[in-house]
Image 1: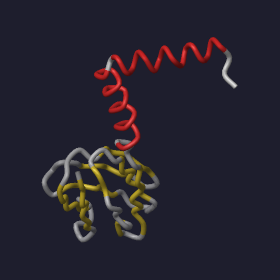
Image 2: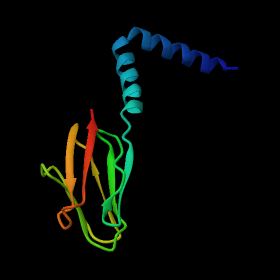
Image 3: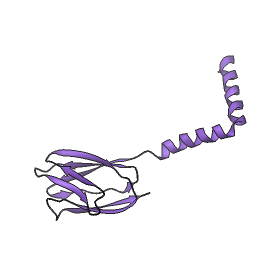
Image 4: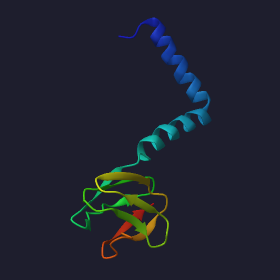
Length: 120
């Protein structure tokens, strides 16, 4: 059960928000957007001279490229939008910035290829 001071504070808050609909809307949007706009984190593993499975992506997601090989690799976009250098047993992260498809390859081993499919 709420004490009298808690009841009074609750009533005051309800009155304030209902008399200030713009503030209520801004708070509602801020809470809703922070939950829906959370970026996902994905790991793409490079092993045995191959890029691992590329997950479905959204703008704002973070990709960690992890090189489990004994060779140096890159994850280089054909459109030059990213170029990640990966020495053996290292990892680097990047944030996906735009929607669309981006084909990538390893500049040291051009037969290693993949494609990012990024949704808005």
